[in-house]
Length: 135
Picture 1 (cartoon, rainbow, N blue to C red):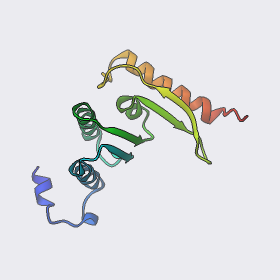
Picture 2: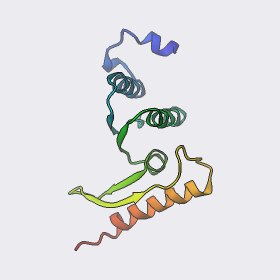
Picture 3: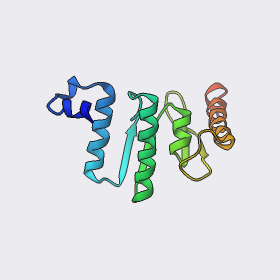
Picture 4: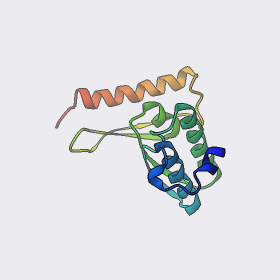
């Protein structure tokens, strides 16, 4: 909190990448929007903060009607936050595979079932991107 208070008068270009990400999420929360479009929203924060922010997104989704479209390169993040993962192909980008994520949120990252789901997503991506089948 002290760090945030010390930056109250700062210009956006004076903030770290992580602080800019947090400000973006705070602005999104302030709008009360029912649909969020997030493009790598936690990429500039440390792992501990990333996990906290991911849990916050899940709490907010559980508390009110909220649709979240999240673009990420993180398999763990996709499984942890998502109910469905759309795998995009290399250029031209298209939806190459759709994988449903089972189970209640939040997942336990230490549960073997969670690890199995992350591996299933990894295999779904590798099937498409390493050995694409063009019809």
